[in-house]
Length: 510
Image 1 (tube, helix red, strand yellow):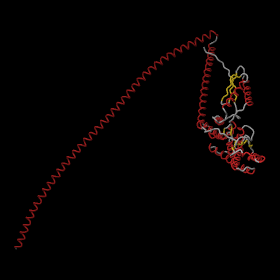
Image 2: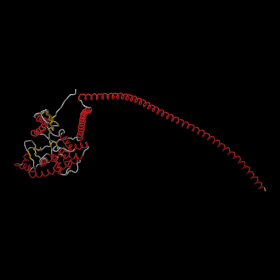
Image 3: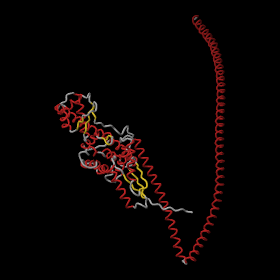
Image 4: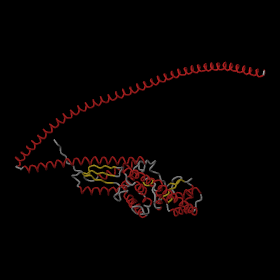
């Protein structure tokens, strides 16, 4: 019982104690919650205040930016308006000036119209006066007077037309000459050869004069064997340390030179050795001929040339004409003709090919009779070259009249190459004497007034007195002068004789 009461009392005490403890703990938690809530509210207020201030600052910045943009846009618009206003003012001034100009022009037109009306009136009066005068003086009818006037007007128109045609022809000729000079100048500048002439000697130097006896041999057997084997003449004279090779064939002379130099280098000179060295020299020179021909064809880019033509072209390496190496001359003519053909818009390949092959005849002119131009043309024709190429070759020295533009270009290129300074070795004294001789021969004829040697002696212009020489006599005079030049002078190429007979009628308008 007591235990039960004690238990009940204990329970009650525990309940009271728990109630008390709970009450005290709840109040502390509530106070803590209030404190935390106050702190959170304070923090929230501070944060709200901060956000408000930031929003205010951002709004101010945005307002400032918008204001700046608005001011910039306003400035640009003011600038555009100012420029537009300026243009409008300038246009207005221009319109005013144009209006003033139009007013002046209108005034001038009015004045000119008045003058034209006055002229028309004067012309009508003059026509009427002329008509009346003609009718009164000649007793002509109106129709007859009209025919006379028309005839007179027709004559005046023909005279004016003739003057205009003469002026047009003169201008066209000047333009053509200018264009031709320009084309030739371009061609010469673009094909500026380092040298156009080359010294080709037939003198072979020997180590000493004692070698001359060995070359002659016992009773002349060595020199006889050499000349018989090579086909050239070996001239041994008093010239110190030198012997001379003489032959009309340049290739054969080159073979002889190589043979002789090989014998001199070897030292053993006897007929058997001469024959052996000659065979080697012949192969060497033949190889040089072939290589030179192929190199010339390659340099000019001329393709499809017959092998025999290539070989003939290579032989020109050892051929000279008035001191000018013919192979180098042919290359230069090919380049010049090609450049001029390109400037004129004609067939460049044909011009270059014809220029390269134009002097083929000089390689064989000692074997075939006739001018080298015709010989070369015949060879090219026989070996399958085109007829236009053949024509260019045969016409480049005037043996045949040129009928194509390419033929004229090859002729001009040949003249340009041959007339370069140093191309033809001729002293100034002999050159001047030749020109003086030309003028002297022509001046000796009766009726000749003036004589001019032109184009480096390639042309002679003879001015005759029209009262002494007729047109028929001019033809005979040109032929006689040409015949005298052929008989009495030595000259390269050909010389053109031009006889000019001029009649002039002069009157003065006062």
